[in-house]
Length: 430
View 1 (cartoon, rainbow, N blue to C red):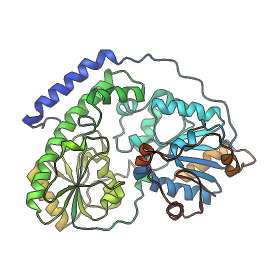
View 2 (view 1 turned 90 degrees about the vertical axis):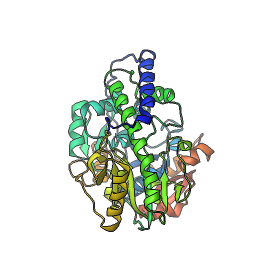
View 3 (view 1 turned 60 degrees about the vertical axis):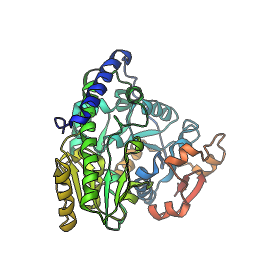
View 4 (view 1 turned 180 degrees about the horizontal axis):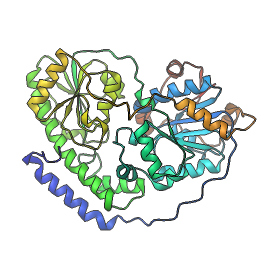
């Protein structure tokens, strides 16, 4: 797709790439020696599963919580801000499962380990990225990689790459993002956008500065090359997607076309009307309900998720760094995309193979084994400790947007275990 940017966006690409060049000298990071590995700790059968964005993480984390309960763990599942607001010091030592490996996580890991916990990381940001050592180094922080007690790899290929870039323990665990609730097929055409970098709610400059800060990386070398590739792919993908939505509206006038804008994007860049409407479902699962087919931009993680969910899809282009770049039925033009959607509605098919990238889920088993390596003889009850907390996070508009208030029975139903509320969007399962 990189060589297929329509003329109307060519000036946007030129200006965006120039802005990247102008920022090079202002984003410089001083490299420091890696800290020593933490001393041995002893932990009980406690597991802490923080959640930031419920729409993406809650279903899989709740299923994992139920698995760990059946293995004899006490599990605290809930809002990440609640679990970490006292720097994990008032939680009985246990396993903490984080979802990313950036510079901010490196600080979380050090704090948690100092409080006596062991830390495993299943990096959700790498969920859709093709396993490539240079890209993995770009998307992660060296200190976070080094300090993790265990890095959980979704599949065999990603495990091999992790072992190239870190000296930490790496285990193939699969990923809960393979799990999907039962979906109802409908008549709608769902279209997902993918231009959060060049069409972000933040300015492009703010996006670049934020990414470099989060990963503690200078804007040079592989990081700069990665961003340049993203700029070209996203402008090309955006152009093809806009043309495709228009073509679908004309080709399928009696079907509703739902446009799901990436949460990081400026939705005002998109126009709706007629049979094209915005989809504001809180989770991708809910967006898929009622959809006959998905249309996604090559490289987007939605193409992977629909592959696991069994939803027929159409891929726009063939670029991007993501594993969905060769899944499903491909289309290089808007008319090809409309034809492919018609074909998927008439005779649905799933095309592609992800077996080397995503192994069967064994995350609960591997966390169990990790705890036994650091096992204490006793497991301290979490609930009375939690009640003595001096600080706790309560519902706030920004946090609630990421994690809407969720009833206890929803958590219990997903986990298949008793779930007792012990704080805002936080539950104890045992």
